[in-house]
Amino acid sequence: MEQLLLSNEHFMKEALKEAQKAFAANEVPVGAVIVYKQQIIARGYNLTERLNDVTAHAEMQAFTSAANYIGGKYLSDCTLYVTLEPCTMCAGAAYWTQVSKIIYGASDIKRGFSLLSKSVLHPKTIVESGVLAEECADLLSKFFAQKRD
Image (cartoon, rainbow, N blue to C red; front, side, top):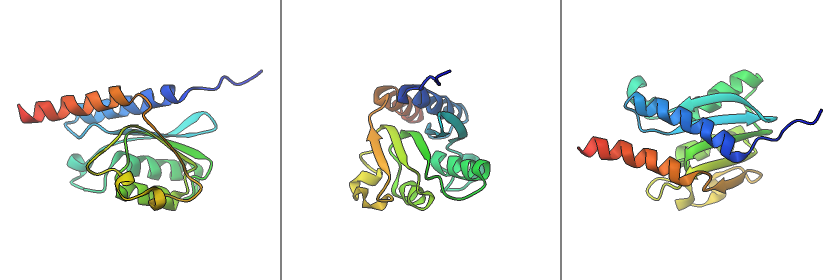
């Protein structure tokens, strides 16, 4: 029986569910999932406020969880789905994990890694942007609008 290939939108919706958890916890609503062979092996969302840790980004949480699942530090056959373009710290961590692909929703024009260049990523890492970008950006806008009120 053939395995049904799940779409990038399917997995980004799962990352958005993680971002909703962050939103509910009064964290910047960024969510991430890591996929291996069409299966989510790790989930993460921002925990910087709860953990009082500036490095507790969604991607970092997901990288740690995925490495524990796989039993090794390299995620070379995995795809990271994240609702916001990774910052340079998370892009650097992605480099060290050797993740195969990064797919993100909304661009981050202030802190995203692409401001520097894609050379911060592993040379074999493929990047795709704009998957459910509007939904991802809307959640962030809603969060920051509430903060301003």
